Amino acid sequence: MPTELPEGRYLSLAFRVAADAGGQTRALLLRNRLFATEGGVRPDVLSLGPATDYPRQRELLREQGQLVDGMRLLNIYEHFRQNGWGGDEPTGATLEDLSAHVVREEQGVDGSVYRVIYKRPGEQRPVIDYLRPDGSPYLRMPAFSINYKSWWRGAIQLVGDGGAIVGEYETPGQWFRRWIRELVGEERAFVFMDSRFVVPHVVPMRGRRFHLIYQMHNMHVGMPYRWDSPVSLVYKRALERISGMDALVTLTERQRDDIAVRHGRTTNLFVVPNPIVAPEQPAAPPQRDPNQATIVARLEGQKRLSHAIMAFGKVVEAVPAARLDIYGDGSHRKALQELIDSRGLGESVKLRGFDLRARDALWTTSAFLMTSLFEGYPLSTLESMSHGCPVVSYDIKYGPREQIRDGVEGFLVPEGDTDLLAQRVIELLRSPELVARMSAAARARAESFGPAACLPRWADVLDAVVEQRPLRTRLYGVTLDVGRLRGVRRNPLARVVQRAPEIALGPVGRNGAVELAGTLKVDGESRKSGLDAVELALAWVVDETGDVIEAPLSVKLDEEEFRLRAIAQLPAANARLRLRLIWRNSSWETDLVLLRDGELSRPLEEE
Image (cartoon, rainbow, N blue to C red; front, side, top):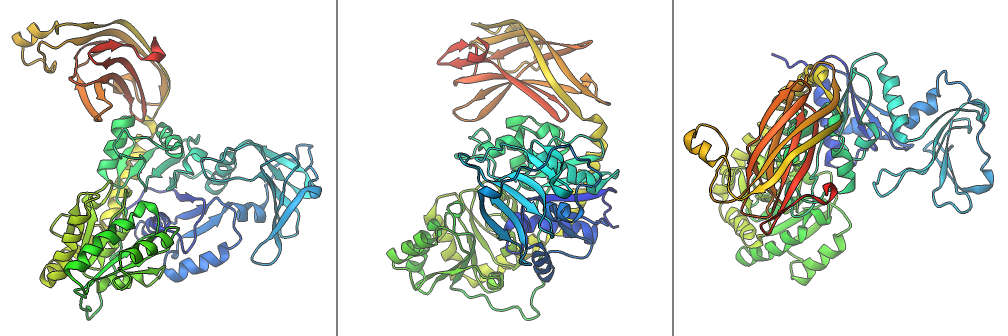
């Protein structure tokens, strides 16, 4: 039975969509192809960045099969250049004459001037006029970068005929949201964001007909890649808007769980892996070269290709005829070539550069290597498996463990263990029988990640999004009135536990505890979700290890007020006692006490 998606407009936002883009863009386009060909909807891909080559990009994407019938690729600058500002009335202001401060003019692919860049004396940030085909400006805005280091200052001026200003926006997000509203009209819309850079410009978006879905494609934490590891500012800005999303969709359950531990297991967290379309197997499958290993990756630090090269030196010692081809380009090419030369591997390891035919090599290679520091959900490994090529991968967050069963479709190696990485490659190169067995398993495994499995999962997410919309909450604030918060030498409930062991109060003993009594009030609103849906939890968080130790908490809702009581036994390690509130899509938390070297104290912000 065909999978049906909910009715509505389907929009996917990106700053740039191009035929030579990387995995995130390819995944975005694949999802939209799946929706168009199997889901019965007509999705639009919306690009938010300035470019003049979109007619050519559409041609290339169609030639590659990434843009199919039923899909449109639209650009916000093209839209307003062609359609103007509708019925917006002049404000009475006119565009300032900056002709004395022209830095340069940039031409479009048709040879006409596309935009003019100005720079006023004493100002660092340029100002840009975007021009209509007749050479008149339709938009003026400060230079705008999606990079989080680039802070927005200034205003976006909408320019009508004769240089009359017909409107002004304080932020790019206001302009982006206007375009979405114009495209959608009064229809229901599912607005997908695949870039963390897009999220802060769109979320939140008012209106019950808009359902905002953020699909996270990459690792959101830094080293050492624990749930509580540092988060870059751009991810911080995206994740702090979770409550304004109808769905945050991760590619793996592990990443979803890490976000839940950090921000709370709200009702808008979902998991949908990226699908892979398995290529048709050649009628006469080529033989696999028992000496060949392959990598397809950007030559960047994240991919840690120096590990693969160093490991392959050990492979060559055991299998002198072994060869490693590395397809891809990047800023580390020179350094990697120097490493290859310094190890005397020039005849064994080749940097092949970017090659659209690189994936064809996966039909004949005996091992695919993946040595990244981190991934969101690597498509390269699934593509390798779809070609029947066994994978030898570091067991990193996130993805390889969810795709590869160690010893079945390939091997998982503890991250950084170049000795074992080399040994696993040697095992494959020395045993064509092992390669053949893993090849068949890899091909079958990849098919289980195909569109047929992916579309129903998306349908489930979108059905849940629609169903939960009336239950969404908006949290304005939480007031916690602590009547009692003190350390006690012995747990005063120990005797109760001994008499009534069925009461789940957690372990007790001679260690001390924290006694808590207080009330909590919630300031928020929801159309159909009452305070009985609020969940409260108490836990010790051990920052050194990342352990979270749940503590028993008694909660009673008395009219509009929650009454809290707890006896939280002290953990063996330094920790903080965290109180967390979840109200469907909204969350709040505070640290109540700190335990340091056996001493209890209040957090500085509450002293």
